[in-house]
Image (cartoon, rainbow, N blue to C red; front, top):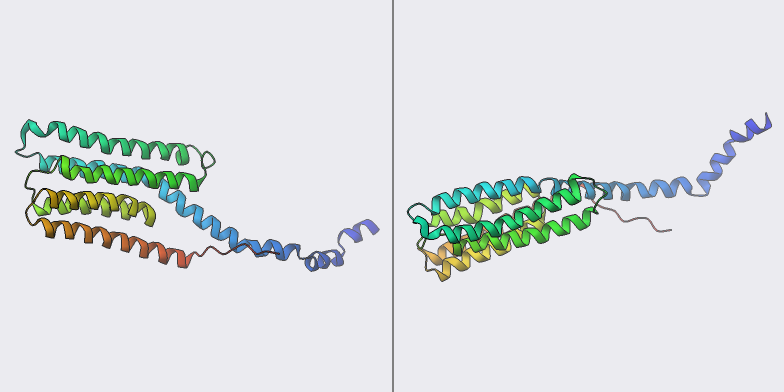
Amino acid sequence: MESADAAFDPASLTKSHHDGVPRAALSRLPALHGEASRNMVLSRFLARSPQACITLMLVGAVVLTWSSVGAGAASLKADFAWVSLVLIGIVGITRNYIRGFARSLRRVPLQEAASDLRMLLLYTGGAWGAGAFLVMPDLPAPALVFLFAALPASAVAMLLHDAKGVAAFILPSSAGIAAAALMGAWPLDVWVAATVLVAGAVIMGLTMLHCAMRGRHNPVPQLAVG
């Protein structure tokens, strides 16, 4: 009976509270919750990357169809070069998804996989911007140029919801398209270049605002020290 009384002695429970063990554990709960929220955001970022790849391929097919009307077989080499560049980025993004997310979350740390995805988006954005030099007609319609810049940027922003990833894609793609408009003396070249850059900046700004609002609702507190 004495051993049973000792096992259920209220004094032992009170002592554990005074020693700070439960308080230390409870103080870590907000930090653990914040870390879990951040990991969920990164996992969603990685999980949506295949959808972004599919969207880029669809938009690329539409652009190639529109731009190749009346161009003939002379543009086949340039079209093939651009498609190859974009596909390299898409294959890299898909491989990163399989290696870092699809097989197991324990394969590659989420932070590392997300960083790799942003680098791949930077390359893919540059490859997409190169398409303004390779697949655009000699004097493209301003509407075609704007859609070539805005559609993939908007799709990446709406699917990925990652400010750094969206910026990594939009900055090189918008810069390449604007440079092609100015260097190629396209119709309304200055206006088209300015519109492309402004549209990219607006999309990036809206993405940053969305991420900031999400972070405000799910803050990541610091671990308690001591």
